[in-house]
Image (cartoon, rainbow, N blue to C red; front, side):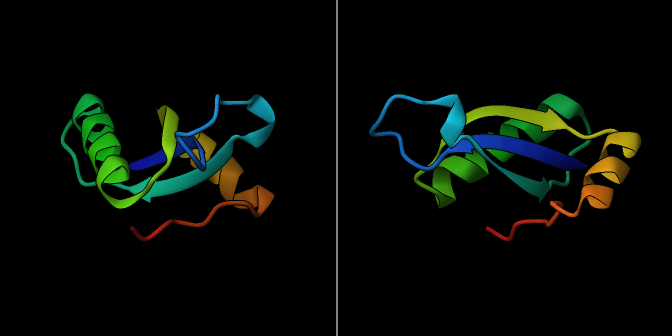
Length: 76
């Protein structure tokens, strides 16, 4: 399952929409909620980022992200 993670680079400042960044993670999970939990745990363990939102990408949404050229799976 591919998850799109919206985050701020630091937890020290208040989040601002203009500073939101995105990364994509391939998470091995049986359910969507299990994947969200694993994604959040991984982000907390491996990064100093402030996670705002985690979204499971549907096949169509994933195809769109690939077409726009911004899609690249992150390695944590």
